[in-house]
Every structure is written in C-alpha cells, then in structure tokens.
Length: 534
Length: 77
Image (cartoon, rainbow over all chains, first blue to last red; front, top):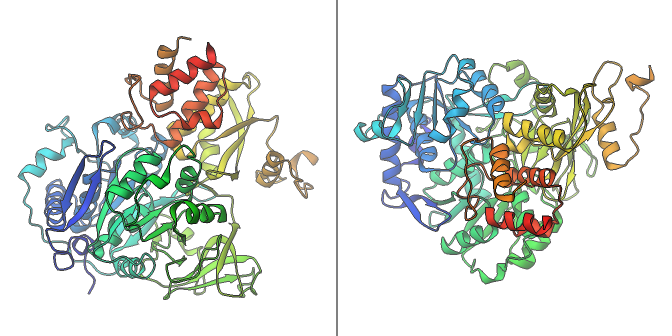
C-alpha cells in the first residue's frame, strides 16, 4: 500500500505536531516558523482551495514562486489533492515558461503579483490554463486571477487525501536534452520510500537534525531533498530566502545550528573565492556533514573545505530522471577527492562500452544504472519514445561518461552529449540557438559549454550575423540579455563571439567540438567533414 | 551618462522591469531578480554602457546599488 507523499511529509506519527518543520530565515535575520501540525493544516486548506477550483487527480498545477512558505506547503497540498506538482524556477523567462506550461497542459499556476506580467504575456499560448492563484493580495484581480489568501481563510483544514498507488504521478520537472525542447520528467508517489532511505543512508539525517538544502525547489534536488526527504523523517529544515551572500549564509549555519548542509559546488566555489570573509569568526560547531550535488566537486574545494570549514564535503550524484541520489560519498566512506563516491546500497551502477559490456576499472564508458528503483522516472511527458530510448535491456543510460576505479569508486569524465552543465543546471545548446534566432540580427549560432572556474561550465555562443548587423559590444549585451529574459538567467551566455560562419558538417550539424576547440585554443581534430570543404 | 540615472536604466534593462526604481541603499534582497546570474549581466551591462572594466576583486565588494555606483564613479572620474 503506497501512501500519498503529501500525507507522509506532514505525518503526525513521524514528527510531533509541535516540532518545527520549516524555518524560513529572511536576510534581515527575522524568522517565520511552521510546525508539522501547521504544515499539515495549511496543506489541507490549500488542497481544499484547489479542489474548489476544480483541480484534482490528473491535473498538473505549477508553482512559480521563489522560496516562500506557500511553495512548500502548497506542494504538499497539490499532492494531497492527487494533482501533479510542476515546480518552476522563478527566474524562467517567457519562452522557458511557455515550453514547460504548454507542454504539461498546466491548468492552474500559483504565483505572485510581481511575476504575473510574465504569465499574462504568454497567456494566449496556454489554452489549458484556467486559473492563476496569487499568494499576495486579498482580492481577486480578474475572474480567473484569484487571491489565495482570501480563499485560504475560509478553507477547511481537514482534507481526505487522494488514495494513491506506487505509480500515481506526483511531480514533474523539466530537463534539457541536447536536441529539442525541454522534457517533462514524471515522478510518482512510490518514490517516497527511496528518498527516505537515501536521506538515512547518505545524508544520515536524524530526527533531531537541523537541515539546510540550498537548492531551489524548481530543480529536482530542491524538491526531492529540499521538500520531501527531510520531512519524511520528521526533520526540521531551514531555508534562507535571500540572495547569495557568504556572510549571510554563514550566519544561517551559525545561528540556526545547522547540522546537515546540502549545497552545490558552484556555491562552494563562490564561498572559496570570498577572501574578504572571515569564516573562522563563525561558530559552525553544530555542523556535522556537508554534501554537494549538481556538478563534479573539484579536489580544490575539498581541500579548502577541510582547511577552512574543518569538514569534508561529500559529493553526491543523481539526475532529474533518477529522482534520488544514486552514487555518493557519505560519512563513514573514505573520500577520494574528485570522485563521485560509491553507489547507494540498493543501486547497481555500471560503466559500459558501446556494446553494453562492463568496462574494466579505469576505462571510461557510459554510466548506467540497473533498474528499477522506486524514485526512477516513469515517463517524459508527451515523449514516451524518448523515455524508452533511455533504456536498453535492464540498464538506464545516464548520458554521463565515467569510469570506476579498482576500489569501486566512480569518477565523472564528461557528458556523452552536448548538454551544458552550468552551475549545476543542465542547459540545452539547441534551446539557446533557437532563442537567438528570434533576434533579427542573428543569422545562425552555435552554442557550447567550456570549463569555468566558478560555474563548472560557462555558456559561449558563436554568432553569425545578418549582413546589416554590426558586431559590437551593444549587440553582445543584447544577445546575452535576450537569452536571460526569454529562457532563464541560468542560460545566459557568458561570452559572445562573432564569426563569419558557424562550422557545420555536410549534413548541417553544428560542429560544437570545433567551436569548443577554437575557443580554448586547442586543435579541433579531424575537420574533414566540415561543410565548407565541400 | 549620469551614473544614478544610467544605473537605474541598466537595472531596468537587465532585470526586464520597466517599473523598477533603484536607490543607493538597495541590496540584492530588495530587488527581485537580482541574483548571482543577473549580477553577471548587470556587470556586463555596466561595463558596456560606461566603457569601463572591473577587476574580480572589485566585483566582490559590491553589496548595494551604492557600492556599484561608487565603483563606477571611481572609474569614470
């Protein structure tokens, strides 16, 4: 019998109802707290509000909000109702939103007034969208733009949750591939069991912990381990709702007595370079473990953390598709700096060659996982063909290249495709190239990721212009901002290179390795297939 | 370009918000969308519009709109 994740996260038998489940820390230092009892009641009210608006099982409800209480208890409310949650990064631009909201046929969006203009600008492209619920303001704005606070006041705090099966859809996150639009990765209620086990085995959460996951709920880590996993164990979680600031972050670690901290290599690299901060002046003695996820953790960070924070950073690896942590370093396992660690105890990971045979230690191949596990995704929305393409026999192909050493540790080598991993977010070069074609000055473009000391990879665009356009700094800025506004700030090109032509092969495919080599001043290798040589 | 007026225009352009009005005391916590990625865009826009270049160390000292304005002033004086 599978229980609804919404219920499991506010289960009064797991955590006393008066225990704080969520503590929101403002940049000013002021704090709002919600006990598990309050989270249960608020999520019930939320479910009742949505039910009255004819949302329910099978419908997809989006949350377009920065970190705030409504994003947390709202997610539980949507799950209790039997609807599917689509958590969205609040910085998505209009194009990024249309791609996701239209593909998922979202019927209701929870958002705030300041983000409303972005939604209104694309409303005509979202025929399934019936209702927009605003978390701020006590009055409805239009017949279909409604006030959430107004309705929450009158809603009952009792709600009989929708009965689910293990494969009942729960959450959808979008992820980028090297071609095509982003794909909706569908997860299920049955994932709870795996998330709980990995929170115990890898994060080693205990019910007296104070846990802080810095990921935004718009990404898989932010929901799997930023909303669900800690609450499945009745653990208090802290969320900082301000912008990144090294001192502010360390005040949170110190003042909130954080014991387990789950963050990202990019954030750690930014902290590492904050040489004007006296980290030693903060008392972080309560901090038991640090984990990271999103990109490979450079050995340099491990050394810095050991020296400055007095602790190791345990890198973990998983993907939007896997739902939960698959391979990880963890307390109790000797850390090999730079390694991904070893698989979770119930996971069988393998490195295979082109023929599907296991590679010998030290040989790079495709990183695959033997399925099933309960948090694995069940489909790409509207793209079942692509979903099936991720599996071969009993192996899920992660799309990452890696090798395993003689001790069983896994080491990331590269992506097998052209997807760019920038600050822990996967970005599709194809999406950026399509977005750039909206600009009248752009004739064609080629987008690549190149190594970056802060972002892991930075996005570089090579742009060939129409004859009438002038390549200058203003146009480079326009290109940069166009991508940031239309797609997302994380997709912003950090470098714009104007070129006469974008190198392609004879079938018209952009030769990204040639662009990457050109940028890095390296030998591009075999260029015999270049279109120009025809 | 006058610094205060020019900076306000740049914030509006970069954060795609024509109603935005910034003051010197404001921090990223006061201005919606001013996150670490938008910050890189702000810096690129400032450098382009004012014809100046920043050192990495200088960038790390920017905590408020006023800090950025002061840095621009020091480069354009």
